Image (cartoon, rainbow, N blue to C red):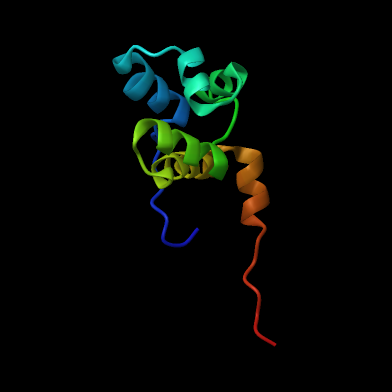
Length: 104
């Protein structure tokens, strides 16, 4: 995994960010956020519990609601996804089998 800095500390997840940095300080409920996003409360609940990954559509909605960039949300999701891939033994073994292609 070239050019990657491996860390033992798991990145802050989207759910943790959403809850601690946005919902709690703004005194918003998951239902409030769901209404603002125009989605079902279940989607927001799954995001907050890290049971659902942020998609491009969700990132755009969160950015619109909170005045952030969609990249903020996508980067947070990507950092978590990469960390999980690097720290799950089965996934590491499968990834380690990948070999560079040789030019013909």
